[in-house]
Every structure is written in C-alpha cells, then in structure tokens.
Amino acid sequence: MSQIKKNLSEDLTALQTRINQYCVAWTTQAGEPDWSTIEQLYANEDLLHYDAVTPHSFANVADMKEAFAEMKQGLGLISLKLKTREDLQTFRREDLVWTTVLQDIIAKTKDGKELKFVQRQTGIWEERNGTWVMIHEHLSAPSSLQS
Image (tube, rainbow, N blue to C red; front, side, top):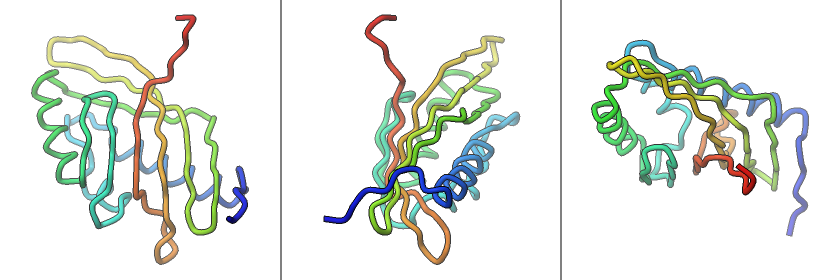
C-alpha cells in the first residue's frame, strides 16, 4: 500500500484554487448558483454526494440542481454566500487527494431572515487531464460535545 502524503505544497495550492472556485460558483445574489462552473468541478460520471444542509444524497450534478431548487423554494432563498476558512488539509495517495475545509455560509431569505452556519466540506479529488475534479463530496456540520 502506498504512503499517504499530507499537505504537499502543490496539492494545497491547486486544491485551494478549486475550492475557492467552488465557493464562488455557489455564491449567488440572484438566487441561482453558477451551474456551468459547478459542473466543471465534478467528474462527469455519477458521483456520490452527501449534503448535511438539505439533507440529500446525490448521484450527479443534475440531482444537485433538483435538490437546490426544492431548498430554494422551501426557504425562500434569495442569496447565498460561501467563504472558505484557512484550514484546508490535503491527503494524497497516488493519483487521489482528499480534502477537508471549513466554510462559512450566509443565506438570506425573502422574508428577511439571515441564516449563518458553518459546514465542513470533505472532497475526494482525482486529477484528470491536468485538472482536479471531485469524485465524491460529503458536507457535514462541525460538532462539539460541549456546545
């Protein structure tokens, strides 16, 4: 079995760039994310994605779009902002890298509510043709037994 390499500088740089693109694509003032960019972040074949926020699991980006539309309507969502914290961790085994990072989320609704929360994004990435694509994603909420 090959050795796991943690936080290689080239992995940190490349994956931070992809995760920043992810946050920008999901951030919207118009109520709809940038689906064309989101589609480029994920592998073309079916993926497995777990979302602690909605909560859903998805087989592909088309499923994400459908679940997002339901969430948007249910919450009366008018804007969404994602921002990555500076705690990215990368773990490499051969041609796969998995990442974990905290993201701050602010969602605004039609009735004027502002929802603020933190999610942990864990992604498994594969480099294809010089570009990192996500082949699995798991969104969860950080927890503490003390709070």
